[in-house]
Length: 311
Figure 1 (cartoon, rainbow, N blue to C red):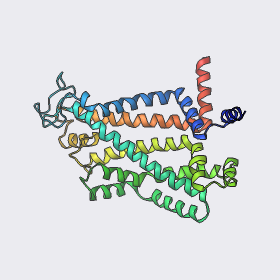
Figure 2: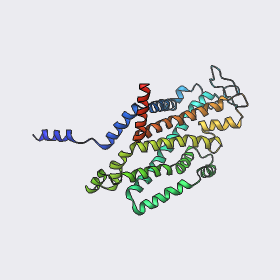
Figure 3: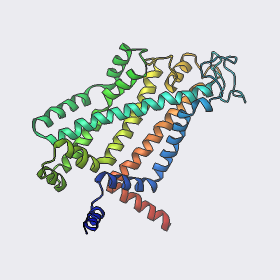
């Protein structure tokens, strides 16, 4: 009898909140065309980054050909001014460009979550202080600040680029998350957790955060788009480590060697297209999660789908 009652209780136990949020997110993603295209593009870049040694036909740093050769069977996109294979550089450059986008987006999102949601939940003086801290970073001129920091640590490597992007990119997400958290701070399920005597950290992590999953993911994807473009821009003007291979450093050397006027336009066009496609993959996923978190956008998409079906 005890065994039976325990079994009934186990079966009747509610599913964790986060598991329901994840299942809803996956079901909505499966039926979203933007998400499907974004996932396809992202999978291509991830596979290219992981299997770069197998996919690249040559050592990207080896000058084994004559300079500025046109595309051919041995070098699909031609060669650089010092005889390196552009296609191999493009494949290997995926690693650092994708790494910067993911890590910078992740760290910026973590700071946004910590500052924004904590500020809204705690309220009072803590909210005012954290909100003021966020506002200061929002009004700072991002581009001059990025250039100053990157120029001071010029040539220090990928982590300086990531740090610069995180410093200048977390505040907008924190403002969005704070506004959302303020709107649900007084909900019944949070009040119930407080009445039960749950610790504030537990309430934020296991009660509040799961209800904001789609917005947090959307903030990460938006920060990743920002990271892709910002990193490429900083490396293009020579503020990264030019000895490290990425799409941004490829553009830097292509510009310095006048690739467009030297008969090697693919040296600049190739990484430019890859940057655009990687940014588009994050942006498409961002739009999809925005639709998931915004009922008005979901209903508008359903209406467009019904009109297309009837027509």
